[in-house]
Every structure is written in C-alpha cells, then in structure tokens.
Amino acid sequence: MTVAKWQFFMVLAAAACVLTSAEGEVVLGPLTQIAGNPDRGLAILRDATKPSCLICHQIPSLPDPGQGQLGPSLEGVAGRYSAEELRQRIIDARVFQSDTIMPPYYSTKGLLQVGRRWLGQTIYQAQDVEDVVAFLMTLKD
Amino acid sequence: MKANFLWPALICAAFGAAADTQDFRPVSGYAFMEPATRDLQDDDFLNPAMFLVEAGTGLWDQPWLTGGATCRSCHQDIVADMRGVAARYPQIDAASGRLVNLEMKINTEIQSKSGGVPLTEGAQDLLALSALIGFQSRGMPMAVAVTPDTQPWIDKGEQIFQTRRGQLNLSCANCHEDHWGEKLRGDTISQGHINDFPIYRLAWGEVGSRQRMFTWCMESVRSEPFAYGSDAFLALEIYLAVRGTGLLVETPGVRR
Image (cartoon, rainbow over all chains, first blue to last red; front, side, top):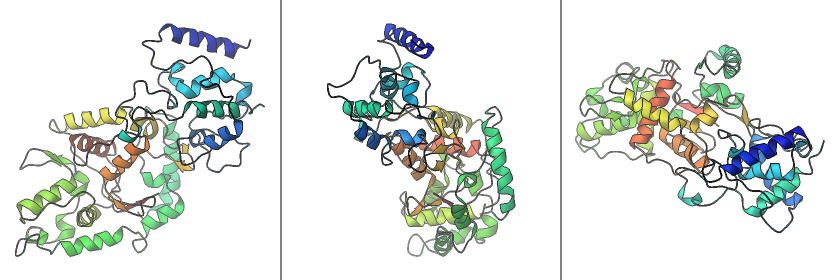
C-alpha cells in the first residue's frame, strides 16, 4: 500500500469518526449497482455546458480547447489515486480539505441560498459519478 | 483608455501580485480581456455601448412629465456638472440619509424634480442616463467615500463577497480574490471590479448594469440571486467600489 493510500485511509477514518458533524459527505463504496461507463464519463467530463471537470482541470492528452487551470491536472490520475479516492473527491472533496474550491458533486450538505431551480438536487446523478470515475481510472501514466 | 502601451506592464504586475495575496493591487477587468475585446472598448466608434451615451444626451432635454423639468433644467452643462459624479457612487443620499447607487439617484431625481415615473432595472433609458453620467467620469479614479455611515454597508458587502453559496458552493472571493489571473475554461478570471459599468457584454449581446452582472454571477454558481436594488446588492456594490478605489472609470466598458 502506497503512502498516498495510507493517507487516504487515515483521512477517511478521521472523517468517518465525525460523520454527523463533518463538513463533507463520506461515501465508502460505489453509488450504484451498474459499473461505470468510461465513454459516458468522458462525455460528462468535457461537457462545456455544465459545471464539468475540464472547466477547472486539465487533461493535456485530450484535444479539448480551453481547459482550466484552477485544479490539479488529471493526466495519469489513476496512477495516483484509487477509484474509491476519486469517487470520494467527486462526491464531496470537503472531506479531505474543508476549504477546497471544488464543488461537492453529489452532496447538498451545508449549501446556502441554492437557486430554486437546483434546490435539493446534486450537481451529478449517482450514475454520473460512477461513469466519471470509470473514465478517470483509464488515465494511467 | 488610450494608454495601451501600459497594459503589458499592468498585466505583468497583476500576475506578480497573484503570487502575493498580502499585496492586493486592483487591476481592471480590461487587463484580462482578449485583445479584440479591448479594441472594441478603446474605439468610441466601435464600442457598442457608446450609442447609449448618445441616447442619454438626448434624454437630458426630455421632460419626464409633460411640461415638467428636464435634467438640463438643473444640470445645464453635462460635461462640467456630471464630471466625477459616477465615480463617487454608491453614496449616502443627503436628502433621505439612505445609501443609493447611481441608478437609484437618477430615479429619485426623475420622481422628485421632474414628477416622472421611476425607470425599471434594465430599462434602456436608465442604462442610457447611467452610461452618459458614467462617461463623464471616464479616466477618473473610483472614489467612493468610506465614512462612519458607509462603513457598515462596506462590511456587509465584504461578508457577502466572502460567503459561499449556491449548488456549486462558491463565494465571489473563491474566484475573484484567490484565483484571478488563472484560466477557467478558456477565460482568464478577473478580480471582479465594477469600474466599467454599464458594460456591453458580448455574452449578453447588450448593455447591462452592475447588479445585472451580480445576478449573472450568482446564477452561474446556481444560487438564488438577491433582488435588484436590495440592501444586499447595494452593500456588495459599495464594497466592490471601495475595493476598486483608484481604478480608473472606463464607462462604457466592453467585456466578454
């Protein structure tokens, strides 16, 4: 087990201990029974009409123009994180860093003044999360 | 803005400042625009918002009630009388003791001096008058007064600026303070200043006010926007004006 993975489990263990008061949503396994579809995941990840990954992150091996710079590059991300770690970051990255700029894609916890149109809804559906994770897991170095 | 040669130096200064958040120097949104967008703003014959300045000049002689007073009845020389006025708004209105922005002040004048009906947010006449008055401050530094009366509003505005909201859980500061100068999609994030309004916005294909821009930003993070003219928007407006103190007024600006 790599150092990064040990750190992940330690953070997760710490977060799990304070589940009721934690700032983020902690999820341990896949959100759905259906295995993620990487092709659909790629389509979601690059969809310029939605708050999608490439607005803030780069994947230089993709041809998409105007990739963002706010978050770390996702190139080779599967070599650095497990599917569980990536899933948790997408669902709610506040579990790892309470002041992260990354929006929680599958949590409505602690959100203020959400627009009427979006109230009670998450950015992604459960299957969207699984599909994006499946695509990210293809990004090996 | 004719001093085009200065912009490369200002942009370099901007990126230097991004690394050192202790030393916040305001940089106009102009510096973060594509060259073609800057060119549109710089040329008064191409700037799509300049027609509103023309329209405003026409409205200066229009009575707001048949036989009633016009703007010119009190302010004969637009250039001399309105010079530097817009750079000082929002401010506490002497008559009412209330904080008002430029549009609110225009409406108060239309009602009280001319007996007219107040113009609604987004009305072309209101945009035209604010563009005309703003234009008389072009090239002058933003100079909103920080006084015991305005300080609570400025503090409230800063709190709004720093509060995360919406489904995307983002504050204004998350982007416009912590990540300005960086790329969001293909666009460079600005510092979020308001020294250029009303602006012609390419994304809208028309001219809009400061508070229309606030509304757009809030909807972008999927938040319920505050109401036009609300205390929350007024507070945000005066906070941003003070945060941009010293920036030169660019009205009417052109943005992406």
